[in-house]
Image 1 (cartoon, protein in one colour):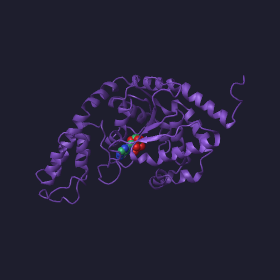
Image 2 (image 1 turned 30 degrees about the vertical axis):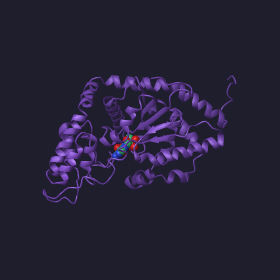
Image 3 (image 1 turned 30 degrees about the horizontal axis):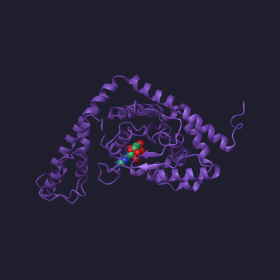
Image 4 (image 1 turned 90 degrees about the vertical axis):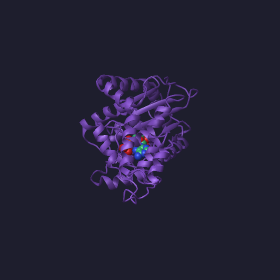
Length: 339
Ligand code: ADP
């Protein structure tokens, strides 16, 4: 994988994931599948966004451990450091500086109205910190510092990407065209519902199915899923269209999910059978990745090495971009003037 200094090469892709520990199937189906697919044909850059984690965690050991865990998970799922650049956000502090510089063209009202900020106001009322408010500006900096064109994400990130485009337009119109307006890239399963059958699958809600959980835990997570709430008796016909378990079979049982659905519709199978089968299929789907993770886990230094090498590879790009931004914004001496 090459990171080229100019724009004549394949389009650049960037995406970041919070260090939230074990990845879940929502992350995978909504975003990671595209991370992996876009390793070919694009210049892909993927990042563990540990600065972002500070918006809701102040436990240093936990952030570090979860960052390692998430990196391990992504590598096990097939993120290939030979084909994509993989690094940790805090190893490239230029992101934070660019976020500050961008923030000077962002009206406060823009960040106040983001759905994620409103949501956090509700879910963590005791810790509505400033970083939470400016989260989308840092996210814009993450993408823009590498002039990334495509951003594979889940649907929950759509509003942030829209805001990133607005920020780029605001900065470019003030200081001249420099940043690229990024486009979100969604998968065909852009929003996975959690085990509660209602909310988005998310670590913070606690309704996840964790790809690398112990087998017994993963089975328990699947068996706890809420199904079609109108199917009370075993003999009642089920409605696969509204049943989250059936919906997940679409992705994990691509060969025969229609038969699974038919079994539900005719009450030939019960919800428990359908869930048990789903757990089997999820375990089979991720068997190789789970094995790879075990191998990688035995070599903790390797993950660090990969992240460090990724950050180093990006240094020239980040420094060059910040240099151009300084120049346009009137910071420091003019470019080309000897210091
Ligand atoms: P979480 O919401 O569990 O904290 P992140 O915010 O770190 O996860 O998300 C990492 C990536 O996974 C993002 O691109 C996000 O859009 C995607 N993602 C997270 N949850 C889901 C979901 N339930 N369905 C689809 N995509 C998701």
